[in-house]
Length: 290
Image (tube, rainbow, N blue to C red):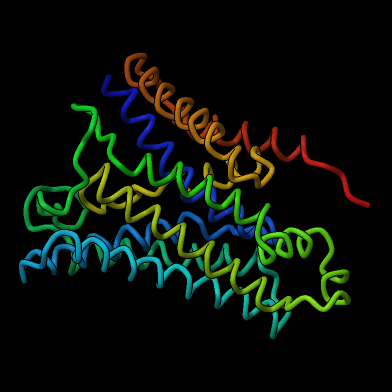
């Protein structure tokens, strides 16, 4: 029961971050800043909730504000990368990768320094106050209401891309930016909106992981989440509705492979091997473009 609930909890994180990755892919961009953005969202959420606990801010407002700050930070970073692409023609793939590579060691330093918990030997922030933690709906697992929010998000984004004008134009832009430009679409609005949503959703995924699974931001909690979310989005062909089963399948692979490795005393990280194989299969299975 624990591993089943953990699997569903992890799939919810993949759904949220996968939708963020899908936004970039819809516009023809590949966002490699996923892990850094998830780490940033989790760190900001943990630090802010620790501060709010000291001033005794009510749980709803504290969690809502922490999530909004995390989302804003992630959105701003991806908007910055998009602006570099628009103004300086910097490669979006490269700038997002560099952004993630810069954020991760910076947060590692903050966690191991001024924001490290004073109790225990774990390199982590202070544990969240009980009132700020998402309540488990399947004990003893960490499964919580995030799974319902994530599924709702995927369904809402599926309707957004298929039923709304801006959603349809976003997909057309991803297929042919020149056609979109000559058709009079506001291309800057499309790309910056996608960057804003993509960055915000990745950071929200990190905040949800901290509040619902780990209850603290420890170093490397983000490991694999960003890459797996990107894999999920690519497996689903950027279809938000298909991100739901893809996320569940990915989470099942990660969770039960870890369980197998634990009980089999494997000497290598089987999860990293699975991630590499999945990304390789997605890459060779992609469509060819002239």
